[in-house]
Image (tube, rainbow, N blue to C red; front, side):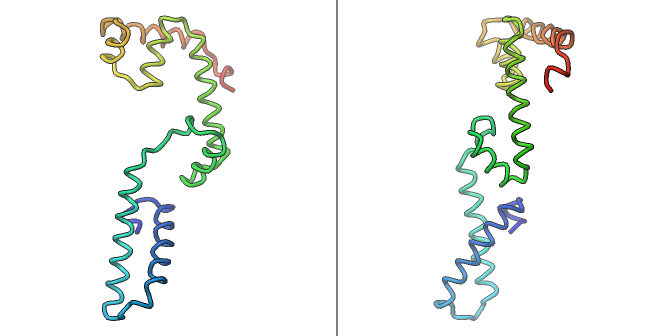
Length: 153
């Protein structure tokens, strides 16, 4: 299972489903090629699992409310406390970014939080690409001068 789904938690879930499928199908089983029959069920179910998982886009932790985020954290192996700390850290960073001067805030938000390229930011803001680079450079320097580690604790 693990070789196909590449996640220990997903492999456990798929294995449980496969065992239930095999148990329910035992009355119809002819018992010749039993090992092959079981293997085919397992492989097909794991492939189906991957396909269904690929169809569902994952939501970032910050978009989920607290209860859903904790459930997702438990399923991905992250402790609930770590997920809560991560969310709190992101919230603090967003608050600090809101305090940046206007001309820096826009490019910092677009580049670091929205993962936009220089070209995309230039197209959105009407600035030249070099201007976007300069503003990001100046914003980083402003952040180094004005932000302290204590602001995030």
